[in-house]
Length: 160
Image 1 (tube, rainbow, N blue to C red):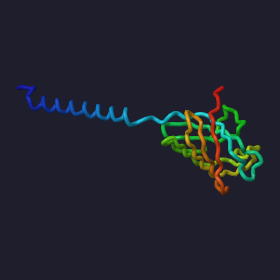
Image 2 (cartoon, rainbow, N blue to C red; image 1 turned 30 degrees about the horizontal axis):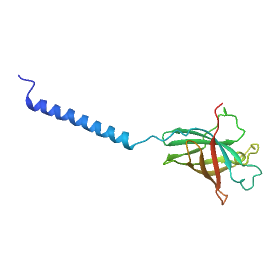
Image 3 (tube, one colour; image 1 turned 180 degrees about the vertical axis):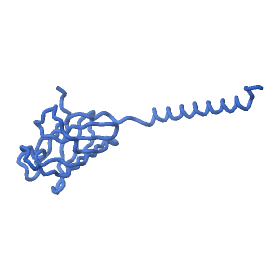
Image 4 (cartoon, helix red, strand yellow; image 1 turned 90 degrees about the horizontal axis):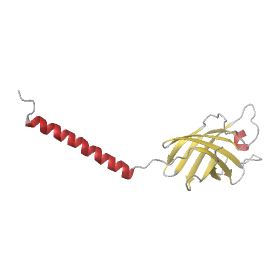
């Protein structure tokens, strides 16, 4: 009994060659057309162009971003927050085409930079940001119940 007949060898040869050609095609396509999102995770100092209405002082905030590919989780903190602060991530969003879109809820005490009251009312916020260069960003903050959008710049904080 002959185990090496021509039909079997031809079938296996064609199958192996097809897999290798497909692998090479997919690899070349991925290297030429698919690029990973640049890393943007970290802490950013946000400087608002103007104060929020009904707030005495709200011109500087901290945005803490954690990134997994294009998916983002973020927290808005007061500017004087400790870097080791264990905050809940209240914003979620996506990073595509150099654009960040985040939405969620943030306490009024954080937005207005005042001491946190017992029942801190949460405001729905949307943050849209554009990556300007390596890490600097510009954007706009929309708070539900406030008619105008607030423009801001975001600069990365130096790691201590």
